[in-house]
Length: 395
Image (cartoon, rainbow, N blue to C red; front, top):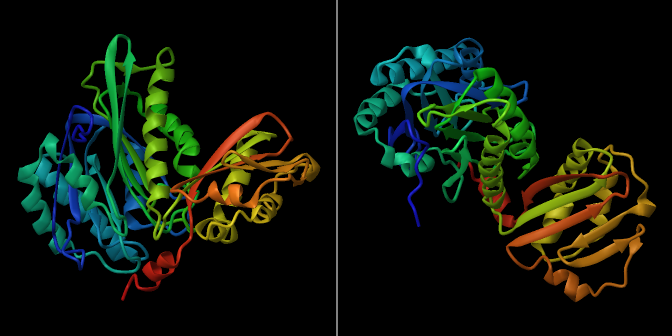
């Protein structure tokens, strides 16, 4: 199995600076060899962490001048007022000094407990320690250093041949709890060796986010820090434009969907990845809305955890999603077993239905009979372990 690396033109480093009580890695740097293009999609929560506000301001003015990302875990730097804003700026300054660029060329990511002030002295010592270690081989270490309650790192890459040249898209993500589709990426960094205009990169990233990270929910709670960043080094020599964007979009979507599904599968306490498909809907947006509503239902998620094919909970959730459909036209499948036709139960075998949710992968498909569009959502089951993790998070 090949070792994960970011796209060409990027180096990374990671280590420990003492922000995590566990002593696990909690600080990382991603550095572009040259100035690159950046784009970002952020939480839509009104309560935004200092790094989110900082990054939004940087990308609004300097999206074509990005050189680095600095990320910490163990402290969200959210709800921290002016001191938190200053801490985000100081993180950027520390990274810029280490890399040899201006602070406005650095983006900042933070994750961890909300409401705690960031210890910038620890960050300063950490940056000094890891900056000399920057290299292409440290991408896996970065993916581990951004983890909080994740049980495993999340990485993905894809290639596309564009104008006769192989272009790479490669990214990492973290997230296991406080994940819901209001830009539910938690933290994700995606790199490419293609060149792309900043405005085009921004619009494309928003489109792909809607088809990937915004289709994920673990617990229905969006975060203050959710951030997806795309950096384009351009070292492949390929420039993305209207004539070749389709192939690039496909590679970017493959990576983002893969990372999104990894987040869902690694939800806190999760034992099953649940894929919800809603088809024959009035629009893609409507299909996604219904799928997300089902994915957010604690009753659906607990039933699946318990191996109970209680399909009534699925239809009940769909019915309050705010999307019009005729219940008498509805069809529903669990895996390969059709449970509902014409809005009423089929003569299915209960044991066979239960077998469809007994494994680690569960598929739900709902036909609304109200159009031709299809949408998806990914989630996980709710277990007693989820309650334990969140009850004990700060203790």
